[in-house]
Image (cartoon, rainbow, N blue to C red; front, side, top):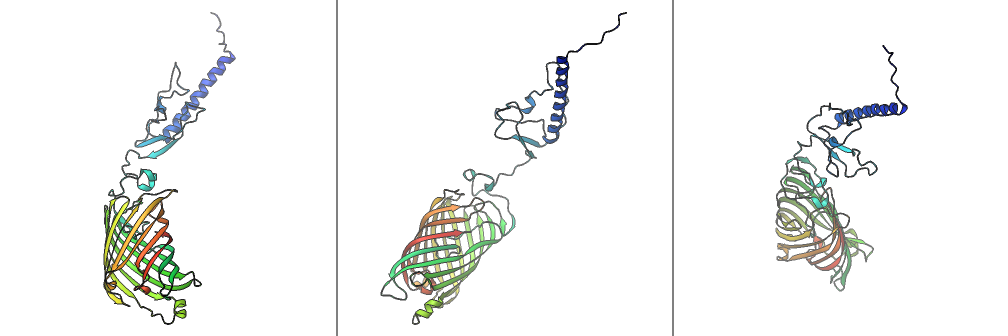
Length: 387
């Protein structure tokens, strides 16, 4: 019986066998890790519609392949990144694990989408209790002279002066320092146009300086209020209380002793309504009745107007706007004033905060109630910020 000879293996065959073993080890490691972290059957859809399960691994050869896939947890999904490595077109792209993707049914809120993909601004959303939410159901009127905000207007008044009637009033500077905030809400919480019940607080100081006379303080009005608000769909309503008092500036009292100071005071109940026939158009109106009056104030007042401005986040380029506000009051024999503003605006992405630059024109009764029985015919440039 012949003695068996040892099997001779060439160096090239040994290297080939070593590569096969190494490939199997690497393939098993990759399969194990992807099975632990990926989820269901490695269904990865790339740019060309392929699946990771369809890609041959180094373990698969014409002779044999590994056929014992690891179990995968349910309700998970792998999503590919938008690009693949051009140097390795057959490689599995980077993936993001999103647990319970199939079970997620909540639609994305506006802040989760680009500004040009925000859908129905008035779609109903779940209601919940919220303390100090980031936006408002009922916002201030853009062209309202007595609305709380941060703003300033430098203007030229062509009417006769209050202290010197023989000459034009000239250049004046009106500034508003205040704001309107939400304290408590039971309602929805989208980025724009929330709905539900809301308690707000508003307050502002309205001051007038005279740039042509050492920037003296001419007058100051002070307002504080508590609106109770309800909004559903495109309609909002408010029932509010506010207090307004007017004061002559210290420098004005020292320089113009003979000017009769008016102690103008209003404690007023307001019912207002606002409606959006279009996303970019607002119509509003309100009636106020003052249960306490002083300084020539009488009970009834009416306010109305419209606003045309993009409702969605504007981005860096901004958007044009136009706002018109009218007010009539009983103490003026139902006269009043009209204010028009137009310019450019920027609306934030994470809230309804609004910054505006533009032109303002006001005609009629002076909105500083210390001079309530004087008229203005003024035009100028303003900056406003609402939050």
